[in-house]
Image (cartoon, rainbow, N blue to C red):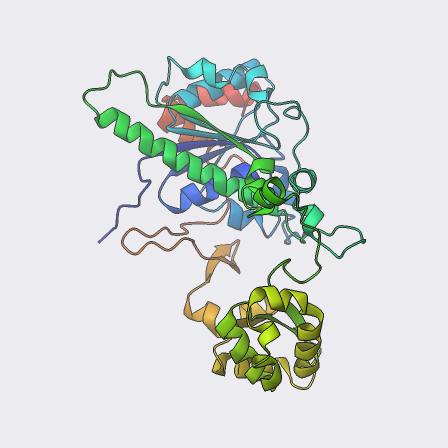
Length: 407
């Protein structure tokens, strides 16, 4: 029996590129939305040629982030292309765009355009700094936004150059916030339409997501600590300020493990496991306040212990004592990890006759799960299909658009 997915019947027009907007489209597509990605004719989304490329010159990542999507090529720099885009947006439930603020308005495609022609439209906007404010017109790359939001300040060692994770974390966080905002807006629209006491005014709204605010939203207690106590949290290397012990330790096989012993009873079990019963019973270390004051002594004891055994032995000992810990895995480690395999964390798709592994669909829904139906499309692969289905375009229309360089 075919299970109806949560977003079946929802039409999403994705007008964005690279990561933030397309990540949102990817997640919506997992769960049944018809996601049509609008791309420039010919070259398509720049992400198609990012990082490592396959034999066809396409990014390996493309087939994951663009899975389940339909590609419609459209020249938005031409008035006729803008007119087609307007007609498509009028047929959509959701628009996801991540252009620089003002670009959609420049094309005549801002949200005000659709207040009458599509009052139920959920207009999701992803940008570096948001649609308003003094920074709104800045280019919004995640690398810069991570610095502005304070995330980069905390990463690294005191007095040294701040470091970045080797990922565009801010883009993905913004994409997640865009998904949350879009789903909330769809739910609000549904409630509005079912409320018979409400005068119909259109259930659509703008969802304004910024990379900076998406990062700032995960900064835990940094602002309350500063506001309440005047404390500026500083970079702390591989530790977590104010919580001890939680650190990364080298083992005899030169591999690293992360140990989180930050809990009074957990700390005792950890010290017994590390053959330091004296520290387990030390009254000065009975609570986190005391452990913070003696962080160097605790870390030195743990590092001395982990260097005596392989990482595998250390992790088994910690598991036996119910101490939270884990290895520092590379993707090669993950690809052969039995837990990941038991959880079906990888999916295999076929791309031009080759098998490719991509991450599975998350989150996992018990009754209405998402799925990967296909990998990323070729540029304009679905142009004819979408224009005919959404706009009732004819073959002669399509020929004219192609002749005019619109699609």
